[in-house]
Image 1 (cartoon, rainbow, N blue to C red):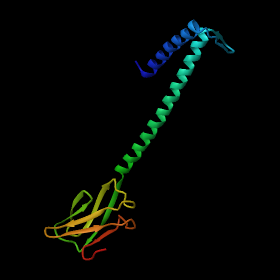
Image 2 (image 1 turned 45 degrees about the vertical axis):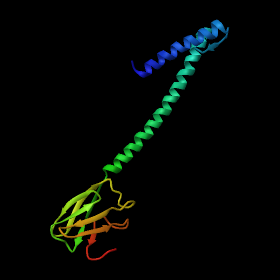
Image 3 (image 1 turned 90 degrees about the vertical axis):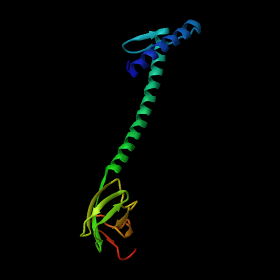
Image 4 (image 1 turned 60 degrees about the horizontal axis):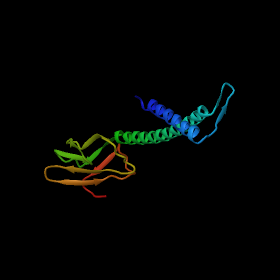
Length: 162
């Protein structure tokens, strides 16, 4: 049974029970007058109770739906940030032979020419610039990129430090 239908059934039964208590034991009165119909007594009490409960339920469902929509949008934004690809190209100078270039946790074999071209996902170059490591059989170089660096024209100079 769908949740919405179950809620309506429960509200109807609670409305009947509430109307029975109000009009049988507490001797209450109620009246509803509309252009098309008119209700009085326990029937009016039942409709009023049902309307109040169902209205409150719809309001709460709307609030929950808004929260879920906000969570979904936040998740979509995070997913988009995680899947966004950053194209990084540049040169290592002087180019070491048989070296490897490592970006954060991504490693690629560095061609003997020293030119590299790689795709990285989920990197925000302007707010959290990545570090690069260049390794060959006997040496290890570290290079920190900066927000003002152009990721499409990156130069890693192995002879000098920044």
